[in-house]
Image (cartoon, rainbow, N blue to C red; front, side, top):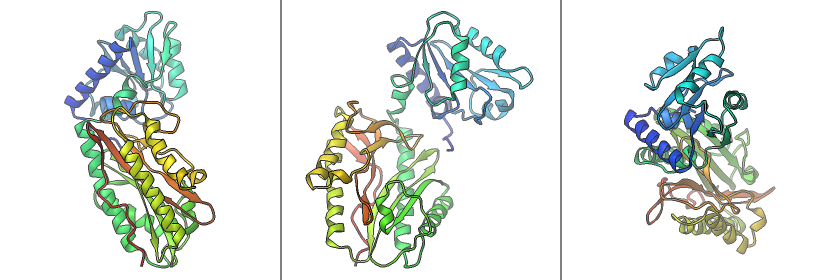
Length: 372
C-alpha cells in the first residue's frame, strides 16, 4: 500500500505524542520495522526485504538503522539520523552504534516492539539488548494511531467520496451478461482516472453474495439476482471501505426481509457507537438485532474493524472486546446475513467517533435502488 507524504510539523507532533505515551507507560525504547507504524510516525516507507531496517525511539533520541541501498530514497522523507550498513559488512556494527547513541545499552529496558515487523528483525534487536522487558505497541504508537487527527480524517473522507462515485457508477452500469470481473474492472478504472488505486474489490452476483470473502470471478449477471459490492480505494495514502447490496430485478419477500434486518442492525450499531462505549456494545447492538429476527446463526463475522493507514487495524469491533472506544476512533460497522446457496446481504459504513456520537464518511444511501 502507498503511504501519504508526511508534513514535518505533523511528524514532530506525533513524535512528541509518542514520547508522552512512553513516559506515561514507563517505556524506555520503541522499535519499529518497515510498517504502517513507521510510515505514520516518520513518513518513511522503505522497501521491505530481508535487510534489517529499524526506527529506534527513546526519550531524547530518534534514528534509523538503514541499509545503504535504501538511504537515498528514505532521505527524501526524513531528516532523522541514519546508521547505515552495506551488504559486505552486515548490520551488527551499525545497530550497536545506533543503540549506543540512543542510550539503550542499559540492562532491563522496557521495550515496545512493532508487532508487524519481521521476526528476525525483532530477534536481532532483542539479542543486542541486555535483558529487555518487551511488549507490543497497543498502549503506545498503536493507541495513538487509533486517534485520528484532522488531516487523517480529511484524507479518509476524500477517499470515501471517491468510493461513493465509483460504486454508484458500477451499479448504474449493470447489464445482463456482465461478469463480476467486468464490474471490478470498471471500478478500478474509475479509481485510476481520479488519482487513486484499488485497495480491494469483491463483486458478488447471486449465490456468491453469501460468501463473506468472495473473490470477483466470471459469474455473469442475470435478471433477478442480488448484487453485493464491497470495495475500497487508496487516495492520498488513506483507504476507503464500503459495502452495498442491491437486487437486479424484482426481489422476493425473503430478500427484502433480510435486507431490512441488516439495515436495522446497522442503525442499531450506529446508535451504540459513541465515545465511552465498549467495542462489544457496538457489535452486540447489531448481533442482537439480527438474532432477534431469527438470523443469528447467519451473521458469520465481527461487526467491524478499525481503519486508518491500514484498511484493517485496531480497534476491532467484536462481541468479546471490552475496549473502550474514544473520540477519534475510526472503524467499520458491517453486519451481514449469509444464507448459503441463496444470497447474502451486507451493508457497511466507516464511521469516526465525535463528541456527540459517530459520523459516517460515505454519503451514499444504503437503500436498494435497482429493483423494478
